[in-house]
Length: 101
Length: 164
Image 1 (tube, rainbow over the protein chains, first blue to last red):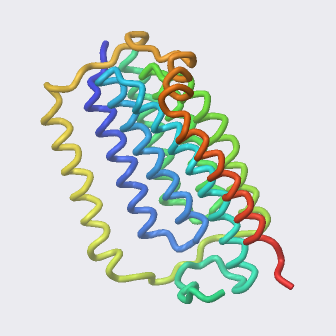
Image 2 (image 1 turned 120 degrees about the vertical axis):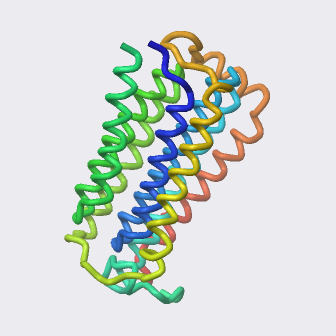
């Protein structure tokens, strides 16, 4: 049985929407950050699905670059979270309302 | 068989993502995100992206999630506090998400006849094909990302170090 590419796109739309919902609802800064990773993964699935559709390698190369940037982003973001926790001793996003550390 | 694999791992993905949303403790959310990423690796394999499936497991489910669990344990993050949060996020955000998913699903399903169907082994991208494009046509972006990673490492060390 073959699976239509549209199903993959719908799955990635569902994952992306769950990521957006988690980003809005969650109050813990680490979980908010994890929902951003979920959204990046959902978009990666779209890239791979369209790379299959058009038989182009560029889509998969783009996913590779997204992974690299996500790794860099995770390292810097978690360092920022550690710095925020050190100065405020909280991980609640509602209590982090000043840009100044 | 292919459809069964797709449905099983697709449902696992959605279940993991929903579990991330509903768990109150960050470590449970992190573990369910690992489930999502590992099942996405299987979906990449079904779409013929061998190298990306391996990279997804090694980079995402391995390196990035280890970093997340490390930070959660380092900061001793407890159960999420229930605060009211932003009212706009609940009033506009939740219906907005519902509209987004239904709109995207409608567009994709209505364009279904124009899109191909995926079969296992129809179009397999080997690592050598991928590396030919990456190291011939896209060598400059590849080198630039290595500089980006170097800067990210320096930034992470500078941000996380204790100030005196």
